[in-house]
Length: 309
Ligand SMILES: NCc1[nH]cc(CCC(=O)O)c1CC(=O)O
Picture (tube, rainbow, N blue to C red):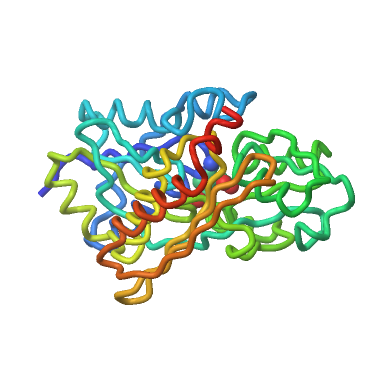
């Protein structure tokens, strides 16, 4: 019997803390443990502190996980809770993703003062987003739209919208749901025309590879179909060397033993697009994602990746 509480690491944003509580609540239910068996440790990360520049400029996704991973590696934390889409494909040595909670809504929500689609936005409207994927997907449909950088927590971005810094913004619907803010969405966008980020909507748990005790705990909440979908999506991302500089989107869906995958890469202005769809077996998720990424990489050619970095 564990005597000290499990130390759960999370970033400080309200969304990150809601995700940590969801992981804790699921672990409590799965193992019939009291709330006191867990302690949620809130850390501020470099990615959270630097909000005036796009992520792609300040060093990418790793900045959101660095502080948590340091404390995880040296044993100050037992595990960390993250949004899968914020996780780099390569983790620090000795750490692994030991669990995936059941994926929530993976779609993007449009928040646009009444417009219920990208097509309906006013001529020359301004869209606030710091995501290269969202920027490219919007500009693909609406080259007349101007994109302005919006970073910060969900609350910060909604405040910027209210302050008139843009006519519309896009947020992960899963985040709105977790914050009980679904009502702010003007529309939830169809993944076939507005594909999500790889990993969007799925909460993951990161822990030490040699910590069998934590692995056994986390196994109680690991959701197999979500893990399989994420294996495919992360293999796709890794094959494309998914730096934060390439607009990239996609989705793996599991139906029993089968898997269907859709992936897309674009130039930031949305004028050049390469897409791929693949059907296969769930048990080959990793290979299917990797091959889809390699195929797309060849099709696009090296010039595609070098044209704007
Ligand atoms: N980059 C920030 C981030 N990371 C994960 C989510 C949403 C929650 C999720 O995808 O599970 C968000 C906010 C957003 O994109 O609106």
